[in-house]
Image (cartoon, rainbow, N blue to C red):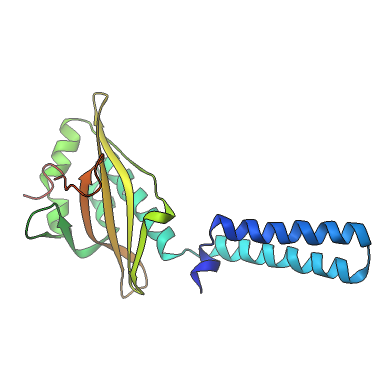
Length: 196
């Protein structure tokens, strides 16, 4: 299904809504059959787009949902719930020459989880802008977002880019991610204790 239907932008909804309002105003003014038919068509199109949008999840929407679920799993210190959203192997780019390749087992056994528990870190993600999404190809999408770990009221904010790849079962799972300084989205920042 086309992305403009499964994940329509707000501007697309505004155009459809404006079309319905204009045809509704014309129907109210002239009160004839052709005017009412145009108004009915405008409402049906608006409703159809809304129903398709709500019944289908676009790759971007699935990626955002999975990032939020991973943040919730990290917040509740649950590595098993976290790795449900991860491909068999994940590439972590932290600014070095060579990215780290982590398996699901590597992520599950990472010292990162002990650090989260020890300091009772609260994890949150936000700012999933449509402008910060890159469709690399039909099977790969990259989303940018803000994230933070907070302990004792001291936030550790960062900017992240997560790459999701379509899996053989049709789902989209995390295949690569990068972390950057919150103030400078181009300057890499290493997540402490992530890799052994």
